[in-house]
Image (tube, rainbow, N blue to C red):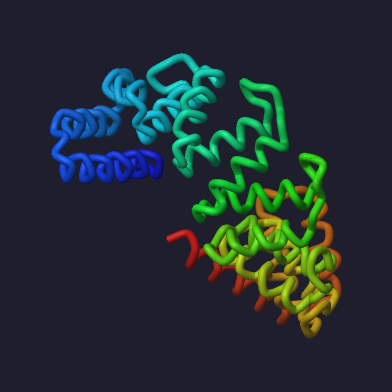
Length: 273
């Protein structure tokens, strides 16, 4: 079962439990049947079952209907329809719908692009603890989207997502500390957050971490650690990463290179079981 299928099943199970508690057996049966249809890949039936509930105002059904239109599963892909259903659910406080609505406004897919509206909906979802919304909100503030560049707010929301394990947010917190944006410049803190993201396999964090070990920023200069992180980052990346690693390699002893290569191999074995 893939991640999306699991998410759909959990949402529908929660809805089913609530409906059973309330004694609404007809709706409970509908959610149960819809969940079974989705899991067997019968997306048309899934939509047919949930659409009446969505039209009656059920936010969970509205969100899932919007998702299906956005993905083109069981229906032709239609972002305008996705927007309609996302907005109905979002206005009822559905966090995933608020996040999805913010994304449509940010990208201008199916609707006119509107960064101010994107920030509004991302913030609502962020306040409910949605890490992707928190990261996206931090990104909007950091880039000045919507006419508001605010590094302090960017760090605030990046950190909230980073503390929940969001790799890109961890990298972004590290970057803000490295550049002194919204926080005092602090290379040790930058390394701390880069490492969290790097350990999750984020190549950009691995590169920046390797570069800091190479230059001795916020940490004692360490060619073995630098080569190790650059080596991981270089896999499947552009020539710039490989070039820096190769420059470093010329400054290392054979024993150091062997140690770094061993660390790389051990990391890959650990993370690809």
